[in-house]
Image 1 (cartoon, one colour):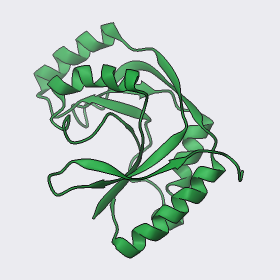
Image 2 (tube, helix red, strand yellow):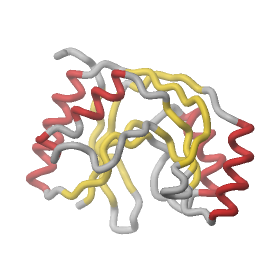
Image 3 (cartoon, rainbow, N blue to C red):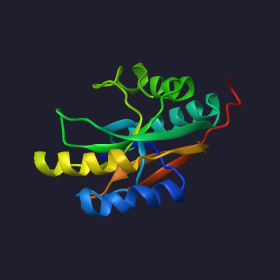
Length: 172
């Protein structure tokens, strides 16, 4: 089964992201707006029990962290994906690194760019048009994330929460 680890922003930021996603993201109905901390990976029932235990330990090592969505950006020319850029900080980086330890299969496949996707799989011309509009609108939103979520993918392609872990920083 496929799993992933994410942080969900507040309803306010989710609503803002969804105002674009419902029009420009074909995955709108499959997953709530989120910041991916660990890309999708395969695990069986026995492995996911160990993974869940490790995530619980990680959550105890990390305190809640602040996110600041500062602008609309794009992954073009690699993909026609638009997103709210989340300013990276040492807490987000440390959590991401913990989720890419040897236990979890080692370093990430791609450079980590904290973000919340708002549009994807657009044509080049649609991407250019929408990106130009959204850059002018912009975004400036700050909040604190106090939990991370282990998700799993259902047969219909949608994602749902398997387990939630409160970030406490009790065991730094």
